[in-house]
Length: 475
Image (cartoon, rainbow, N blue to C red; front, side, top):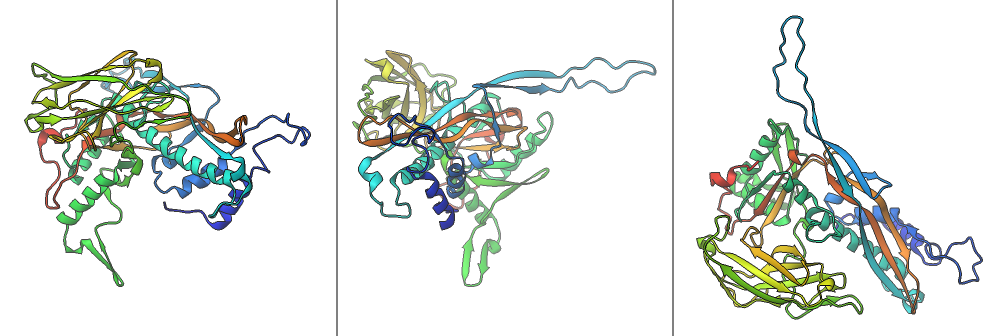
């Protein structure tokens, strides 16, 4: 991580987090009783320090935070400023009536939490490391974990998969129609510049402030820059040599737009977990499903399985519920040809234990599903859930986002910044929750853009996307 806070900042933070000072019992009642109510501790300063110390967080610090006091936030979105009528009139005439078109949008606040606990023994002894207080250390680690998961959901959240989640910015922009599919091909600077020019033109008039990519895609663009550049791409400074550019920007019609690598734009759960292993919480359970899958015939016109994709595949299905992540189940080998659609029937004996399923697909002609990559998620439909894979998601592909972080374009409605809420002690541990309430809102999705299934070239000499069909912006 970058930007580690100074020893003075950490000393102040640790002092604020000590158990004996704040966050456990209110001083409004005698301290020698056990009837003092548990009260939450405000960790706004912890949030600020953790955010600045976690250099991997990119989108969260960019977003404007707007305080709200309701669980549902409404705002108006301008769809059209009016018809493009002629501005000319006859002498003494009257211009025709013109009206703007508005849409009322409602955003539901969602609730995020991270549960941690420290044993009584750990709270009495000093830990080895910069923070001797166990509760302070767990608070810090829990805050970093919660922020990492928050950033991932800001990108990839989908309430149609998990009803408790919000729609992330990828889905909000994609639902507006501004999306293109590279089908695993590598993007190029020319391709990115074309999107900037299109968004700035009529009828969008959008000004992108940042291009967000995964580290893999940024490495691809640096590679192309060096390969296509001149000999002075190697920079000399004293005794050191730097290969490639340290910062990349794409020049749009209105100026340079920086490209920002976002580690959490690349999903940490993109690789299938091990088979026959579960990750459950306490005494909760997630029942193992029964899977049947087969390709269907005849060929489907919208299937993305092409001739080069024909081969044998294994799938791994992972159930997820409030109790945790259940045991992964593998399918038998499935022979797929061009135009196929692989249909799954997922039977669940205890459907209330499962919220949704993650679908992973192996590489072509692999010997098993180990190392399979995420290709889809689907909400549980009860005892029987059906999922179809038409290869819409290219395994290993990445998303590229063209966004504007100004409050008029997008913002984060914040109902609760960050607090630590102690929980009732029922054994010799100190349990607590770290909680945040809020939701992201993309106010003007028509002025932003998503490129899906971006890949990278396997050799340094290859150029980027050249197929006119791939260069076309489907907007």
